[in-house]
Image (cartoon, rainbow, N blue to C red; front, side, top):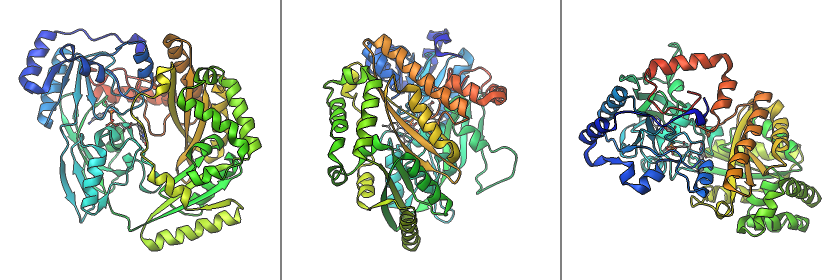
Length: 520
Ligand SMILES: Cc1cc2nc3c(=O)[nH]c(=O)nc-3n(C[C@H](O)[C@H](O)[C@H](O)COP(=O)(O)OP(=O)(O)OC[C@H]3O[C@@H](n4cnc5c(N)ncnc54)[C@H](O)[C@@H]3O)c2cc1C
């Protein structure tokens, strides 16, 4: 289903209002009476929303916002929404970048941030049970105070919640060692759209048919609302090691990452930057040592950042990309690779020795620990204010896709080729596995009017997604599907899609839970 086909839900507002008021008291707001909330809850951080903002358009306003404090309130809320056929959208940090929490058919937005308690930490089992709305950074800090870590560090940790992480199958920057969030979930409890509350058994592993933790992880609020989650946790690492090398090009960098994984090393973070991203990420020392031929490229980047010449630079994306490619190859910039290791000092030291040996064997340029330490110290340097480029009529976005090693370089080249005439594009590779990796593309585009921007934005996404589908690559590694990628999800699922629809029908027979997402 396309978002354009979804119409605002029609239901008995008077009756619903009365019931919500009785249930939530002053934790119930009518959106039309709270202008700022009407705008805030009509969107998440999907860049498409910034284009709508340029148009001054609030396309998907909710009708009501509620802030539950208990699971019972959620169960009662679901009963009201079922009775009156009202869309119900779970909303947590609102940091999603694919529109997952956007109330595309109006209805009730259920903000979960007041369900934020740590319920239990079990030191013997190394487990921790929490409510879904706890802020990620506050959760990690509390674990750290008690000597533990979850091991999940998304760049958005300050503005996202554990429930949002699980509902989107997020990945933190140390996922190569600790796993993605779904690997950390041992048990969860969910208030289903059909009125029941279901809970999975807390066990280290099982062979009891399909794994329901994995069905609800990544369900993006379409089946029910997660009310309690138990994670595995780890003792805080005693040691952290940093290592950086430079490869001649992306291909050589990919080969080094593959060999690191194949040799049995388990870095916490693995990051390979393509030539352009290398210019941007390198530590100040690293950058100052670069060949001056990179000057043109650096000037272009400065212009992009300051907004000066931005329109021309982005409008003529094909020329910009070509000129940058030439500048980068003349400058011999190379591709930076960063690694961190953590855990017991003996394990960290052994792995540091092993990676050093491998880099020497493969004749990579060893850069020591500085660039990796610099990245680690700046890993959360993200601005959440509306970037200046949006005011200039441009858009920025990121697209994270994954595939096996044998197809990784081709995927990188083909996605870039598909959009190089439309947008400015660069990439880094992070989140490594024994069999493959994720690619994280950053794009910047511009069109003369917000209407054309919207068209161009969707067209560029269409091109990138089609390459993934053609190559059998995943259309998302960790940002999820939301409203952005759902039509491609249906194609990617193929004959599994009708099964997915049946699961939806069983959990949410009235179709109230977060309509217009995940192809439903
Ligand atoms: C600057 C920036 C950096 C980012 N970095 C990363 C990163 O490193 N790794 C990564 O994986 N992502 C990253 N993201 C994306 C985003 O932070 C993640 O998708 C995050 O997991 C969303 O959590 P949230 O609490 O903000 O959820 P929201 O955006 O509020 O919701 C996301 C989805 O989950 C559903 N949902 C939320 N809570 C529940 C619940 N309790 N029960 C059922 N459904 C629920 C919502 O309906 C929605 O569909 C980044 C985003 C930004 C803006």
